[in-house]
Length: 504
Image 1 (cartoon, rainbow, N blue to C red):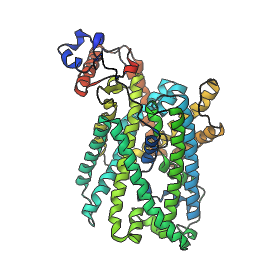
Image 2: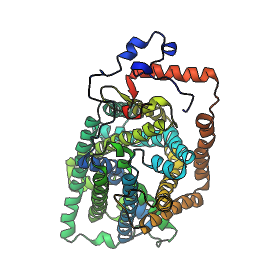
Image 3: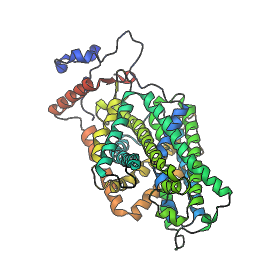
Image 4: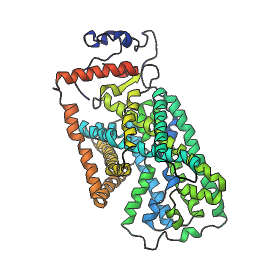
């Protein structure tokens, strides 16, 4: 993290012979030819289709296929559940439109981190990226990866259960493959995301079409049954709302890669609007299809709703459903790693994370260190026994910082009214969405004060970390030498250099 300036190895006069020792010959090979017109930067390779695939492919994970029952549990009736799915989709669209304004008016990658930094300064932004790096992203990647490992092996072990060790080995292989693809090529990872997004939408259509056929035949009796005996409780509606908003989470992923988007002033708003409409329609119609086949009680009793649905209608073809779920998880893994690595890249560029994370591979032009920094932590998380509780500790942090970022939009409207805003939303949209985010945070504190308190304590560790690693300039010489040596060694091993756009 921020220390005294360390000479970095990217050739020419910037090499410090006193500190590089015997390594210049290898270091010099990292410097592109001076006659080459190609600069070492992150290229603008995210077009409209790729942007849509990043958003849709990351939002639609395993949840819609496995257990879309959180909303039904807390609403009590099918019509109320469908209304809640619709309301959550509209509210998520409000958040996405707010981020579209932020992404076009602040044309930098990094999403939440960048917007909070711009509006409220470095401390809040550092705490955001600190929590993301040490807990949230490794844990959430591990969770979706474990689902991938479970469902990719399920057809091989049916009807028996999948051994835990086999799941973890397969999960590790999947994580390794995703890290490798994202390290080697932006185009590979983007094309893979497009492919997996079409697989996801195809799987959803396989559910929607038979459900709509049954609905047209008059199979509507399940829509009039309550999901359980007790009446709908108003106290359950906020919890249903929380479940729905979690299902739609991911609409902000394109904002992580703003600097790599072609024509961002047009493509970011377009990709966000198209993606949110597609996801909302898919979620609502998928739930309608489920209820055309299953009663509310059957849906609540199922551990994998899509599998139960397929067994009812498709017979032996149901064995393919776990494969679709696994591919959906793989797409979420790929989109998440691709996007969030850019947050670490930008935070390092701002001096909030180790310098090596802001460097780019000399030939592949990928932020390789920012991608692989998550690898050891994610694999370690696979062996944490209570991983889901760990995510619960910090679920409130996501909404706190998203709400803070959208509040930053409102604040910048007042502080910088002349700021260039190619895309501007009516003010009531960010105000309503920010208030909703803070309501979710307050609900977490009220409904689960212990876990939320633990998560709050973990988040607050970012404050002393900020003063220790960023503000404190007078670090011991041995520490500065160690950090310099590690940076140079990692540069050589990984073949990375600072971005040409950001050299001093």
